Length: 483
View 1 (spheres, rainbow, N blue to C red):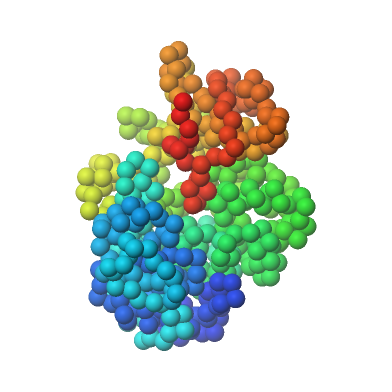
View 2 (tube, helix red, strand yellow; view 1 turned 90 degrees about the vertical axis):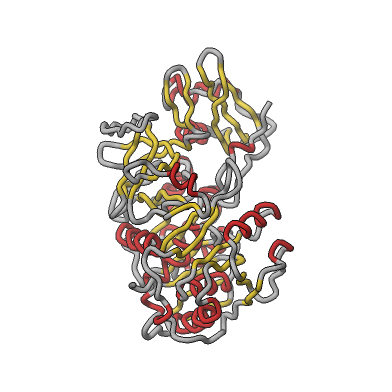
């Protein structure tokens, strides 16, 4: 099979590959260190990686992939019960970690290999013997409706997703990516580390996201920034008082947001301060990347662009009937088919079968509308964000965007709750900009009704000090307090 990382095979040179803080590796150094890891894990089925935001994680995962083995990234912030489930389910034979990392008791019985980033191993090229459909990663989903499921992501999916993004974003080996994303998730690991390495470019990981770190890297030669909406919100908040940050973003070739919808209000604030538009894309653990705004296309705020090369995307009604009229208003569930998909949920044939239609489309559970020119706008999750009120199907996402345009609203989430008259009524959960003087329910309802339509106005407003979020910045609506 073809190599996932052509720049690491053959004659890897002295070009920069990875930088985490003050520590860095060239392609030649990475090839040697990853080769040493690969030599120690070759022949195993699955290898766990204690995925801290450190150089060792990147070297470990690359070494495992070069050996043709599947990596299981572990979230260092997982609770004991979740971690025990993941280990029992994936049954790794060894865990890779940075020297000195203290591992939790759940990992005590597992053989440990410390990753030496200055190690030297065999040339990795001959080690890659696995086929394109063989597992590259087993990534565990968040498990909102039960214990996390392990999505088995084949090598083919990694390669085709990264190549499709290279096409969409004009991503080359000349690009230098910076980000501060966690490395146990596909955004930070696949896109943020494996992406630059597949292109022959470099990545500078911030360790911990700060606007100062972003400004320093983009002003110091980085060309691309990847982030989640929480990060871009902090950037938008900081821009008015930080000319260095504004200069840094204005000089970037590409600003990309993902993992959740970026509010239109933050899009507009960043564009006004920097002249640059943030590009959004849409993907999932099970599908890697499905759509993106293209670098040579229109960066339309609030949309995730068009399907990537090789990805078939359709919207369907509740009964599975495909929607053929794209009018920017008709809401349907996104289903996708293509070589970017996972192969199975590990040890869960029932869940795997339920996830696919008879003709091979994956049921994403995400609700969207599609414009006439193919642009996709996600309006929320089927389980938590589709509200059926007064005979209308309403996506929570567009109401949240409208609420965030109100100057008295710092954060917003929208849900539905049972209503004897309407079926469901729209509930707005608000973190006010000024807790001493929050906007009133009628004021917010009128604000939404003017921007969208009267039937989309919230009927109930509940005030919170903060919204519950996961590690990727997504709002966890199931964790909102219930009466």
